[in-house]
Length: 273
Image 1 (cartoon, rainbow, N blue to C red):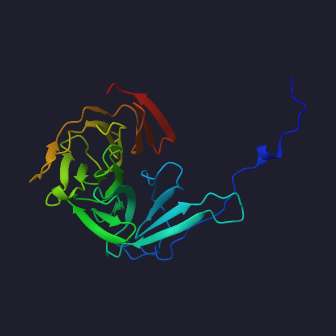
Image 2 (cartoon, rainbow, N blue to C red; image 1 turned 180 degrees about the vertical axis):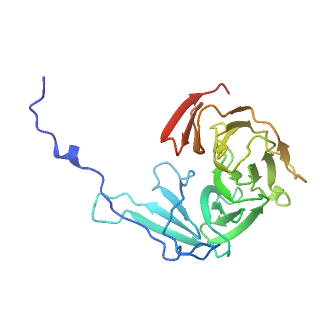
Image 3 (cartoon, rainbow, N blue to C red; image 1 turned 45 degrees about the horizontal axis):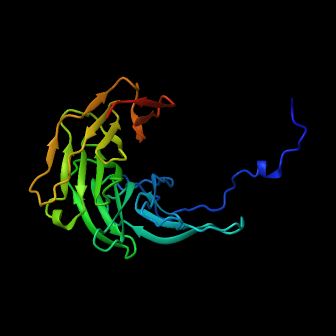
């Protein structure tokens, strides 16, 4: 029987735009020099904040990364976003599209890793706004970056060169920071998305070749290495889920979420780890 009770006004308090962010200098393509519109490619929240602390997040957009904090206030007329730091990448060919958080394991200072078309991973000390290190090795643009959920000093990148590289940010690995290359013939076209499992032991990769691969990640060496370990074969691989490029893949617990942009479909599937 329908209720005669009038709906509360709060039921119709829909989300409203309270703030927006623009960059003034992202108007030219770094290769062609042609004018292009603003594009935001990646947003990542800082995962190492104390419980209850205001959320901090980073936005990557070509030559800029902006670090923001969300202030907790109930005033709808007040901008809830506080800009903490703006980092500009002045490399001529830089066009960043991905970022991930890490931290200095000795001092606890927050680090932010950014990457994109120039095939470099650049690691910044956020508080100082200074470049800490640059990781080089990919043979094509980098399309995604993720941090191990169990080890902030371990990050992964995927590239147009069809490989995934796993990097250590520890000082002991400064001479050779690339620990593992996930490659072989597992992927045949540009990679677009990667994701760590909550245990840090597994990693998903997907991209233009419609393939979703699940990799088993070895334990990170505790001593210096002279060259990365190449892993040629994934733990599991399938092309049966999608019929077009897979631009997003992620773990949902032990399940796998994936999306093919041209199919307008998100698939949830299972695989025994």
